[in-house]
Amino acid sequence: MAADLKFAKTHEWIRPEAGGLATVGISAYAVEALTDLVFMQLPQVGKHVKAGESIGEIESVKAVSDFYAPVSGEIVEVNTPLAGSLETLGKDPYGAGWIVRIRPDAPAEMAGLLDQAAYDALVKSQPH
Amino acid sequence: MTTLPAWWDEAADGPMNMAADEALAAAALERGSLAVRLYDWTASTLSLGAFQPLAEARAGVHGLPIVRRPSGGGAIVHGSDLTYAAALPRSHAWGGSAQSLYDALHTALVETLVHRGIPARLHGTEEGPGDATALLCFDRRAPGDVVVPRPGGQAAAKIMGSAQRRLGTTVLQHGSLLLRSNADVAPQVRHPGLADLYDVAARWQTRELVESWLGRVAAALGCRLEFQPLPFGHGREEQLARGALRFADPTWTARR
Image (cartoon, rainbow over all chains, first blue to last red; front, side, top):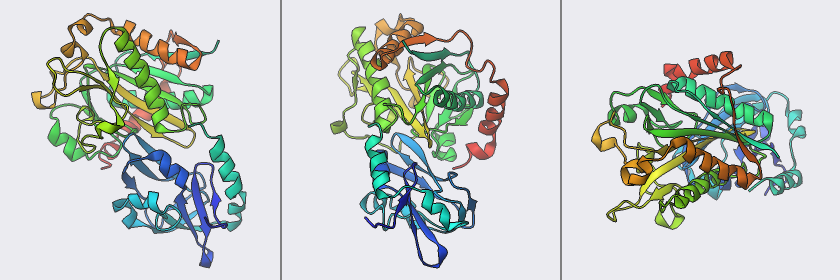
């Protein structure tokens, strides 16, 4: 896994990209916990979101889960094909399974997120 | 000893029931523990899963009010079932995975039914998921659904299914125990309930069944079941009225 990933406590990851953008997805742990995905609702390009705000929903056989913006910013790109190939989330959650690209309002906001070690510790502490 | 709070509410319409369940999730988070609400419906109602297409529901079940749940899963014809909502913080021991709370409540029901002589069991993973796209919850099968043998040896009948909404800090689980077949819908979308399948169940008091079921849930948590003397909505009237407006909004119901 790339060392440049940061994580939200709600299990989204974010990776800074060139041009002041950042890519967002959900962690392998979160995908595995969801199991048997059946539907995904993605956000619209151009939407401005605040950190912690729901940016979409994903449905598995038993549950609908929200996923959240790890930082505030504008959604500039959405991985639209993902909704038709949900298995990609499980196969490559940190690559082809990316969900949106955001232009963060304040890139420094990412510094407040969890690094890989802190996120791993969070996952270990989660109830099963 | 801590308590498992449970509310047994009067009948309400779909939007008000959904608003109360949403508020239950907030109350469970505030309490830091599991909370349960049991309720009825003022009229037979079709509740849709969060992303089920409305057009498919209208084509499949005619003439009933429709409300869209925040939770997933298949559509349920309410009116002859026992509907419950259970909510807890995600940090709770049963909040980590969707299966944890599902199994905890369903296993307790299986134990209750077996104790009363009905050979209920959980639908097994090896039995397959069934048709996950069927409109109606009771036509679907998921691991952990509560099923009972049909007298006569036909395929097992599903009598309880549940589905969740998992938010950032809370989990809301909706579920339905089918008590009897619902005569308000066409025969092809009716499902047999416990009382249709087992004569003995027709004589049970639902309240006693629920006390036994939730008592087992409470015991598994090391706490005591405590039915609340006032309705869940008491003191939350404005909050529930606001929530009901959102669930009654046609744009919510027709979101897909």
